[in-house]
Image (cartoon, rainbow, N blue to C red):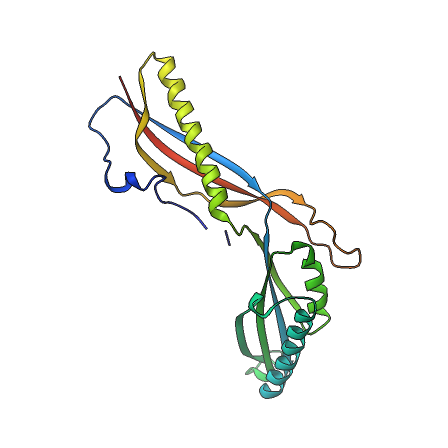
Length: 228
């Protein structure tokens, strides 16, 4: 799950500037693309237990989750890096008899997320978790902690491309372009994982290998210029 930004590029244009009535206008679209190496990972793991007795299933789940948390803390994961995502209890039925379903037990699932900015330890987290109670891996997501920096860089590239396009059009038609735009609108774009995998550095040869992908930040502007 990556955020989408759809607000105008310059806040001053949101209320104070309206599209002029002049017909001498050039509308262009500029796109800026920036590639960045992710610096944050969120792992989602679960402890799943099944028992005929719901209380026994819950107690076993609790024991294994506590063991998991202690093991994660032993490798340097702090409490604030761990978050409960969901806790569910579902009855399990046997439908094989062909008549009414027969209750055969209960499944208890405790799902947690672990956030880390040390991407080299992702494999170690997985190995530690599955050796200490976890028995399901749901996902791992990579992101950027300082998103605003990369968004602004992409916006700057988009603004430059829009101006270059308008200048090229004006030059082709021998028009006198007013380089100060009269309206700027940021189109909704966002963050996209690229296909190129990255090495996460000095991972231990004995741990589960995990590979991140670069993230592409895309900004798009529609810019309106006037000319004489």
